[in-house]
Amino acid sequence: MSNKDKKISKITQENINELYERIRTIYLSDEIPWVIGFSGGKDSSASLQLVWYAIKDLSTEQRKHKLIHVISTDTFVESPVVAAWVNSSLERMRKAAEEQDMPILVHKLTPNISDSFWVNIIGRGYPAPRPNFRWCTDRLKIKPSNNFIIDVVAKHGEAILVLGTRSAESSRRAANMKKYQQMRVRDWLSPTKTLSNCLTYTPIEDWSNDDVWIYLMQYPNPWGQMNKDLLTMYQGASADGDCPLVVDTNTPSCGSSRFGCWVCTMVKEDKSMQAMIQNDEEKIWMTPLLNFRNKIGNFDDRDKREYRRMSGKVLIFNNRAVHGPYKKWYREELLRDILTIEKEVQQIGPQGFENLRIISDEELRWIRKIWVVEKHEFDDSLPQIYEEITGKPYKFTDSLSSSVFGKKEWVLLYEVCNGDEDLFGLQANLLDISQQYSIFTIKKGILQEFEDTIKRFYYENEEEAVKVNIEIVERKRYIEEKTQI
Image (tube, helix red, strand yellow):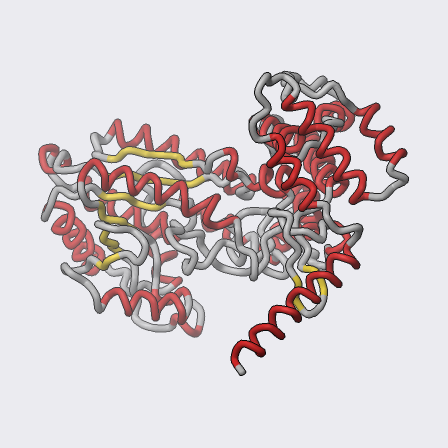
């Protein structure tokens, strides 16, 4: 037992029975459905296990009092090992709930494909998430869970969230929990910050890290998963953590947890994945994943990003441009990397990972659409890259554009522009826009698109863009100072 957790354990039969009784009392006190967040980690496993045992002791009629929804969010970039564990847990849960006549419905949630990590980073060119640009959590975790909870509230008027959060996780977590405990409108139920008509119940809020493990080791998993296997996964890495149901941006993400996204760049280095690879020879196949994560986690990436923002505007900070999305060549490089990693993992990974997909067909289709239709990259390079790396033909060859131009014309135009990236971008965009409108008799909107495109490529280069925008800022400041006199 760790020094900081050296105290009388709460895991006695008497205490556990009291907790079971409390859970049953809260469950039977109203008809508000429960939503339990399950990540597959120790805290969410302990919370769900407590609820399962408590409700199982009710009569068959009492169990039908209301539904309990178990939700687990797959971000599409979860650690493959943990994703396999969670998927196995969810399947066992469904089967056990039916066999034991439990009022539990299991839901695997996913983000919209347009919000996925690969569609945003490879398709749109979003730079890898970083402390001042954490675009991933809302899209990958918050939206899927919140949308489900909002639907439950819409149908039933209210919902109670059962979460595995603990005060001992961090001082910040303890402060937040204390704040909402003081706002409790009912015993043991706290309001949520971002979701209306929702209350939160945290059954293990005052448990220590050791309390959680003692409970999991002393009480067998009621849906048939082996808690000792969960402990083994934790022992494979040095840092401890869990991946909670994330419902707001104040909830810590999974960067310091071994149950987080393998691409997470919110921390300087992924010590958990490093430890898993170093401590277990059977995890060496994950090395390509770690190398890719470290590649995109290098924030010295100005040369890989356009000097304009996604909107086309130039933002100045400390007398230089704040760079925007990844450039075309780097997005293509990342796609090659991912397809190569997928192929390699399928070849060298353990049994059960032969068909592991790192990036899905649907994500590839979205990326191709963004490149061709939104970014006007009419060379349509994705099918060629796919075939080059996988050695397989790209199946989804549907036409995305009315453009008569292709790879040959793209190369020719680049040569004509003599390597001038801005001139080339302007010409390519204007040509593709005109081709897209060529099939319409009434070309309403084409002039506006032309104008927006010309504004986007207005500057000859980054140096001119920075110079002009600094002058604009200084001119505005001068006018404001004159006005105040």
